[in-house]
Image: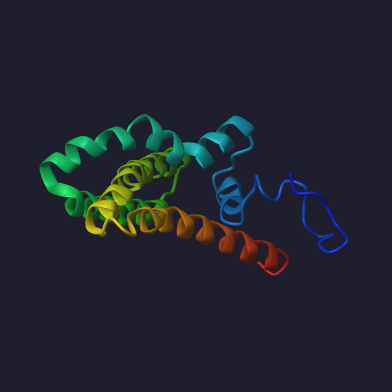
Length: 152
């Protein structure tokens, strides 16, 4: 919950739960059930946890670190296009699950590959940069989201 403040009185209480991009497909697919909204929002994370992270070992064994990252990126592109053209809620749910496969494999392989490619002197700092820039990207998107809430 985002508390209303004097600075942003127009911001609704559920601004974090109903993200800028998700408020459209709930209306488009006529989704009113809160559990279904939660499942659609959390599908990539659920799939990443249950399946995506566990696919890392076989992908790395057969394709190597760079191959695993490349396949994950291709899968993420396919999932993004699939989400853009989804015309039913279950089609969107499947696309978001596929995105979770990509996120799980990429998120576990990228830090390992970064650690293998860097000199020992700066290894810890460079491996943590991956997480720092991921958090920075989320922060900058949130900041932009909160700034343009009334214009979007």
